[in-house]
Length: 356
Image 1 (cartoon, rainbow, N blue to C red):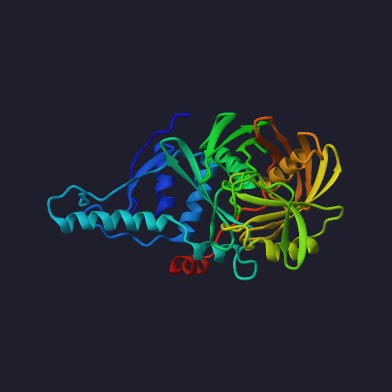
Image 2: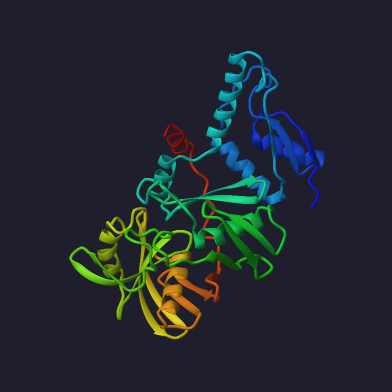
């Protein structure tokens, strides 16, 4: 798709710029992030931004180009001018970034929107599209299976991606995404290679594959197998599983002495060779209805222990995923994505976010 536009005045806000560009026959534009001659930044109006984002999505705008002020000279001879340039760039970037406090406030189920996490992006780098995965406690996660699928669907709908296959990057690394239908609501994702090695998960002690080890959580001994799917998981096979059981274990396992980076916990019931069920307690989130990496971890463990075939359906309270583990340890996840809501933040809530 061809994107064409021109530089336009930002004095009347983002929505006005978008409307002007549509009137000009364009579908993208460039603008100054602040006064081009004085360096002063205009306060961002959250309602204006939300209105523009709606217009942008409806009209399939391309990427916008933000222009630095003329007076910014990173290579100036005078130190005070270089310092001004550094401060200007830092301020522009800060205005775009989330903070741990922002994330906690957004995910708060009483005073915020309520969520199991936040996906921030896209961040465009030389190797491709990147997404930052936040846990609801404000910590950053290495990756998220559900997050990758959700963000891939967003990228398609927002016009960033037109191809059937593309690569999305998290802090852990590359995830290869394939859209399986026209609207991108069903996806297959390569989550990379799993590892049972203690130094890669990580688990304390000598280097070994952590398979069926006895570990104590609370005052109870459990047979635990640990695996990395880009983030750390411990999986406990059980005859019966429930929310109460996984929460009781997770309260202790998340921060147990065995796991220097904390850990995600799944309790798993094998139904037959092609079906397993899990309950999930996530690091930084607590009890969770569904987890892509959790499903991959449980399927990998069940196959490793000889309980199932390499291709299984993982049943979770929040839905089902198909997981396939190849001989080289590469794990593939297939599942659906659907919209719940589009939300406009109030100006009061946005101001509170910006104050953190």
